[in-house]
Figure 1 (cartoon, rainbow, N blue to C red):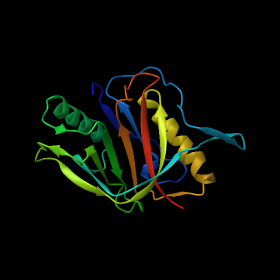
Figure 2 (cartoon, one colour; figure 1 turned 90 degrees about the vertical axis):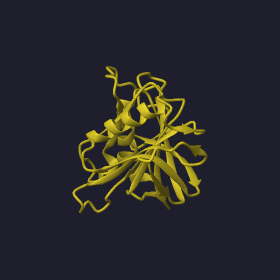
Figure 3 (cartoon, rainbow, N blue to C red; figure 1 turned 60 degrees about the horizontal axis):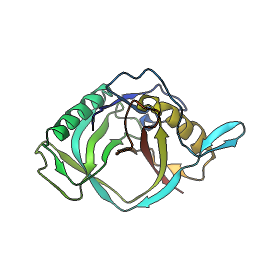
Length: 203
């Protein structure tokens, strides 16, 4: 993976927890903002509503570098450290995708401290660095959205999800976790770059 992912928080809107505000962008400066991407959009009341894939997934684990405080700017540095380890072959894995998992303090009584893991699914891996931490993701139903375009415009996709889809959907987000899936479709700076956003939901 040649590009880095850098994460930062967006401004508070819609009176939601920090899961609404997180966005990611590459360490390389991107000038064009691109389009929202290949979300299957429907119109309702003049507004575009994304139509996600609903996926039920058994429990799994993520292993990687962990950050647990409140500085969203540190997430970009966390990813940079992870990519450097991956490029230097310190990490050996048969996985072909990387995961960014953000756990939120859903009632916001903890000064918005969050836990973030930059890593991959722990399935069949060896040579795991001692500094890596592993977290278990329980069985969940996920609403899966695909963001296409420069990754620094991903906030536009989150706007569609949390601003339009949630208020009209029969599903309710758990608001305590969201996951970014980065695989071979990701190129960071191009209009064709894609990442998936997984939002845990309940009926």
